[in-house]
Image: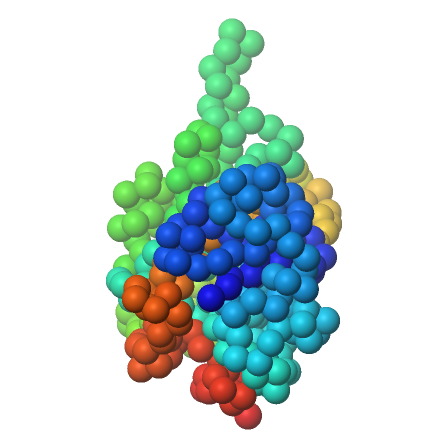
Length: 374
């Protein structure tokens, strides 16, 4: 059975779905691996390193024509046309962003698995691509903020006087937010954070941050059974917005991380809040690709409003391509490994498994996931 690793073709994508480390592990499962020439180049993994790990270096057609195709981003129509019927595809398929895609996979006879739909259960933690990539994005957001900020982060006491520490406010305490808190704290900032989920308070405080939140009955019901933040009532949003508006005025750095699966990003920082901030302040909006947590955010751009820079960088994890690829490739290996029969070295999928049910979009020419049916 052959596993294909094609080069990513979508604009700006620097990551790759396998590394020499995971190629060696896949070979250990009894699989043959074909890596498209140059697939790992943007992540600093050379063809000769893949070859040394046991992979065949081939064409894009050879990689896309494999029995199992591992990718970072969803395939283009041209790539999908080169995949064979019955092939397994595992990637970040963004089915909400491209609603017609699931039907295309079904028509092509491809069994497609959306890695971002991985259930939040203990057994699947090592396969959770959202967590592995968000962790890096949270770190990079703070580094980008520090680079754009015209002052120092830590307090500095010098013979010429004392420099006050920066104040950083993290909005959304998921994986990205927690890493942002930790990184900003390590850089010496005074850190505070907010989230609609009251249970994140202890996590914020354990990292040395101050928790900012309206705590009432609504806040006790702010998390879905799947572990994601859910949409709050209008009344709660109004109270929280008033508290946040007062908090933001005092901040130098704001990092927003709030995303709701299948929905536009919620607005956390209004234009009025932006204009209340001090000139020279920085906002890094991690939700830029889904419309932004600030209505002034422009995906892929940095805009300045009243002296406040709003950074709408997309694919932050991809700007740490080597580490992002290493983590993502391990996620894919951990997902694929239990699906390979140890005796026959072929795919043996338990279609009733919770992980499979959670991630499988299409099977045997049909769209099977409830999130994308119809």
